[in-house]
Length: 231
Image (cartoon, rainbow, N blue to C red; front, side, top):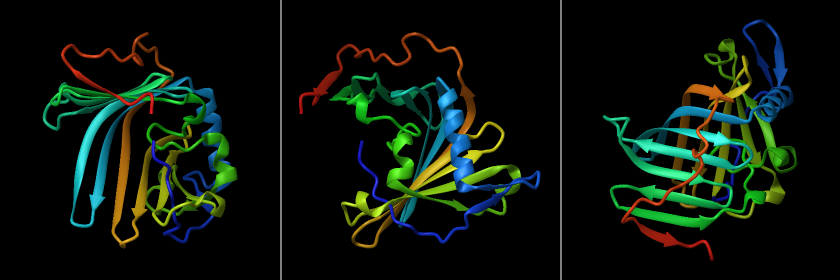
């Protein structure tokens, strides 16, 4: 998973307001989020992933299940038929698998579980290292804050910056269970071009009973396997 190189693109306040009149600092919101995460064994949701380019956008939909600390099954589905899976990604704790049925192709790579503990599937930022490696700010939102939804902005601290490509990570956390309901990244490239990805979650479930083989990938018959696990 690629590392994220983030830059600060918004000037934000550090205090948020809840619908019950209470105020929360970004540290309090993060600690509540971290505590909810640590209590969870697994996390499932449907998602809509929107990528914004300078001259357009693309949208993908699907569902995922995340098992602590580093197990994931993510399925992208067809726009008009959610029962039709167009891409599958599985992290089984040892390998990362990616399968595109249309191409009949499987990609396999080594997955170093010790270095792949994540805040959320696909983000790749270690929960334990957030305070050490990232600056955190609370982005005020007049529409979301009264509903108990808070947006945390994370940017790399100077010692983590190793590229001129700059990215900012955002996580939206809902007060009721302090779980994420949306997350995204904004990337600014050397040539000035910018790309944003926003993932909105729905039908969120925590600690549900999972099939025993949910994080096991079975290579489809006749699929071509591209194995880079030794690299």
